[in-house]
Amino acid sequence: MNQLLVLGQVPGTNFQVTFSDYMTIVCIVALILIWRRNPRLFRYVVARTEFLIAIFLLRFKQPAKLIERIS
Image: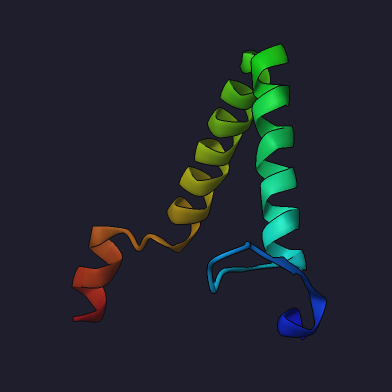
């Protein structure tokens, strides 16, 4: 499907720009612009993600005493 959405070929090369490549570049540029305007937003997102990962890991971590009883 991605190969059907070829937007163009770079002259003199075999490199083709697809729709997915174009959208990836647009998203990266948008993230850079947002980051420059409000860097605290990204720190908040990173802190929130780390918090959610810690909670997720604690849910599936088995206590040592429980493992000793099962063994």
